[in-house]
Image (tube, rainbow, N blue to C red; front, top):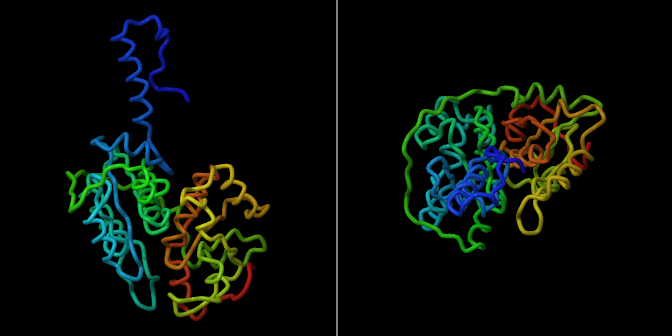
Length: 318
């Protein structure tokens, strides 16, 4: 791996003091490199005291919205700030119009990021206890949507941190404020009208990140209508993870998604789920695999079914 401080001199020719400084400069160059998809626990631990790192605890329970915030107060990675899926990372639900977790208004999200010390020079790390599904991948995607690329999800999440025996803290934590300047990327979003247009194409690259039984309409225990968007194919987010709860290798993920992408190419790849949260897990895996930027249908299934005019399908992949 090349270093930004490559040296022409041979370190063996340096005195002890100079050699140590040379070695430190190499290490510092690695530590200062931005993480844009995943970060191992070892790397996060090494940067725990870095003032240019902001850590967000995104643990959340759909069944008990404030449960994980209480768990955060009991124990979290030192320096972590809590990001609540429904209060911080989602906008207000409008019955009959939006999905269950609509995107927050850009001004409010910008304000949240700024109040929590994020600016263009900050490395953001997000973690949860569901392998990135709820809701650290959502925070990862939201920051990328607003043009901040130095954001990564802790691979293996909270469990990996504990298993490694790294320190934890308790209580509420805060951060100095910064000025977050959004650089919106509307090309990362597909709305319902565009999804409908994509879904009727002969070789649609529309993917549903929910579990197979929910996709088939066999076990819908969250939304009032079962099934999936016609033309979609099922790519359950949990297939991105291995048995330890970490993301599979880049090569494995790349093969997994390339096997699904049609011969028309990847320009029209769109992911959705129940409410636009777990689909971000597939988007993260897709990008981590080196396949580029796919798009999110933020409203997802829970928005799709608010209109009787939009069709629903039951059964296996289209």
